[in-house]
Length: 464
Image (cartoon, rainbow, N blue to C red):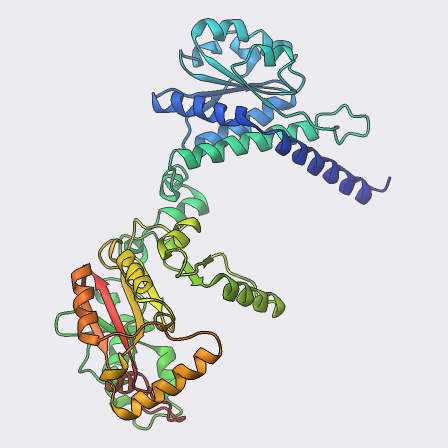
């Protein structure tokens, strides 16, 4: 057989073996996890042991367990007979690896560890083996055949044993609530440590390296501040020092060709208002992590479009499918790995008018349950009776069109009552932008003359 064909055949055989082991998994796996959790919770450890090829497999399993927070060591069964048995203590767990279940070096350990008071979990070829009969729990790793053409060299069986070891480690990780931050603490060196341990405070600009200008500043003032700080952006703050916007060198380059006397313009007229922000205590890796929330059908369409256009989905983007009328935002985010221990920013635009008021307030209430600093920006439709005649007519025409398209408007709000409701929920800093404020801040000097229609407002609310 040609080398490439042999390679593919080996991989196919090992895949077949993994599938077989997966189908064999049963309640014994759950029992093994329970035994290990009991031992770990009382301060005991997992001792992994194997001989031959399983010696190396066992070392890897033990290393994976330890790196994910489950105290584990590897015990060479031969060295165990010459003093290393001292590693074992009463109520520890022995994870014994032997595909045949007849390895003499492992079997010689069994009477000794039984006298010590150690529970035995074996990964072997079944409960009818010598090792299986001596074990408290047996996880069957029987495979149809080895990938070796002679069906002799441990290949598929060791792959299956390693996979079960990984499965145990991940099941324990879940059961013990082991977090990304915990993983980082156990990996302080190298890329993993740098990526997971650094917080925003460790890498952000501070002091003289930050360009800050007041709302009254001109674009020229902002550029001078950026030059002095050697920064590509300037933070624009109000009299209380609260961030109101950001002006970047990219904003400058985009505006220069179209805006006369740009340097003399107020920076607040060209800045990006209400920019995305994050608190200094968050992990740096979270800065760029985005959760895209949408109706499952719409999200599937988006992903299909990305795939068709050959646009890869970055690792910092997580899709969270949520139908707000049947489940909550909290449920959708939790199932896709959202970390609710830190503050977060929510951009919720073009959504509320299609939801019931109950669904809207349920989502807002979830945001208030997050740590201080969490912010949501959302738009909402004003109650039609509060609109002027022109805006009301525009709204009614649009509402008729979207209803015919199968997406009727379902909720409208009185601005003052909505703001009071948000304050009662726990939002502190609340900014409710009217049509005039939106047009002045975001649509001023647009060459296409685009303007806000007048029947919606934008709310920016922060949890205190």
